[in-house]
Image (cartoon, rainbow, N blue to C red; front, side, top):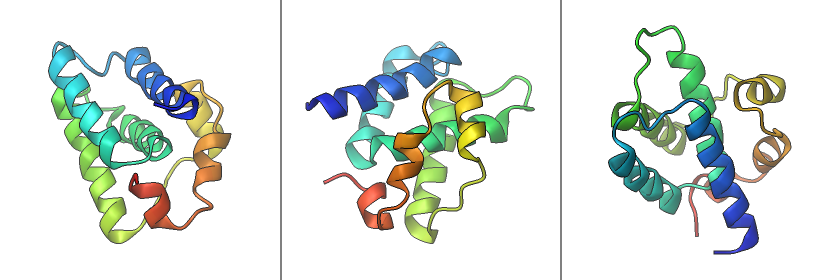
Amino acid sequence: MTLEEKISYQRVKHIVSSYQLDGTEADAFASCLDELMDVYAAPIIELALAETLAALWLRVPMPRGIEFLSCVDDRLQAWAMDGMTRTLTPEEFHHITGLDPVPVFQSLDFPPPTILRRH
């Protein structure tokens, strides 16, 4: 794993731990998240996590664990098939995640196949 990949993975893990998204299914969640990270570029996963958080924010209780990742996967698949339709601004992304939005939103300048799918 390159340094860039390690940093990207840590950013994703930061979002997950900040909101305790793994719920009570830590091992299964980690396995599913690793599968997503094998398929999709990390910046896109970061954006999908943040957008899913925003979409589910008012649901009580908010889904966590595999149910939450299923929502993220649905969003990623929709983007892969229909093109990306993001709803968050860089400022909103930063507010939700606490992370610098530049790596995520800068990656959106590349053609969709490059950003959606990993090599």
